[in-house]
Image (tube, rainbow, N blue to C red; front, top):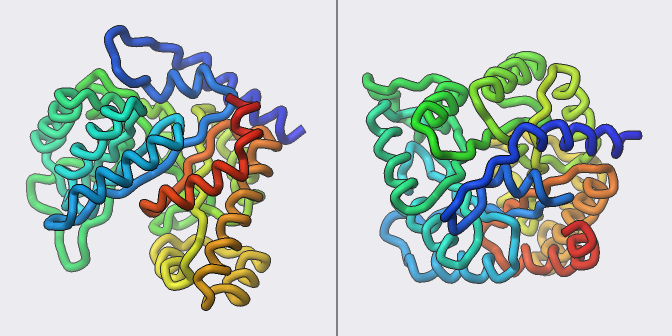
Length: 316
């Protein structure tokens, strides 16, 4: 029953977004969601200013060889790595893979956003993930910042034209929301502003996602939702992520961290196995998009995809 509901949700969403472009090197993501039973995508982050760009190119090339349906590139706090985001997105396209570039607006003027969108279009980037973003610690919003919330950025991108627009959603609620009902109301405004699809923050209990999807459906939110999965291979990294995101850990996963967290090789194996199990359960229950937070580890992504090779081939 649960799987049938999720399949129907995706079918309703897909009917809205069958749009094709001539002369495009890569696809609009809404086209992928229309045409594929299950999509599998990866996320990368750009190098910090002054670091080795050749390594970033290598990560892109190794990830592209895995043949995900698309690769997303994060933006960095307050756009601190925005030039490298665009550079990586362009390199993704050069590998013949569809790119999704993140864009944040928390410290941006309308002119800033217009210039960034124009640069994306000039580089052939057609897919944007619209985010409010977080200011670096200790910084304040500039006086000419025009955007308070992500839905305002979505509307601005729509007005600019020429993009498939994605948004973020939070199965356990955004850390700044008073309650999940408030967060879903904000999400509905974002979708109504023009989001074509949503990608979730990481979660480690699939039932959290299933309950969240039912609530979205009840509120009339029927755009495709891609499940964000993070393979946890480092205990210290996980502790920081939990602190920043507010993501909860089910007892089963906490036991894995407690037992294997101080042995890097064992933790890596356990993290890959746990993420693989999550994805199998998601696909079995009708979730039709999985987005892997790779932490720039194409080797980890490759091992997970190898574990799922027959499932992904069957659903291609």
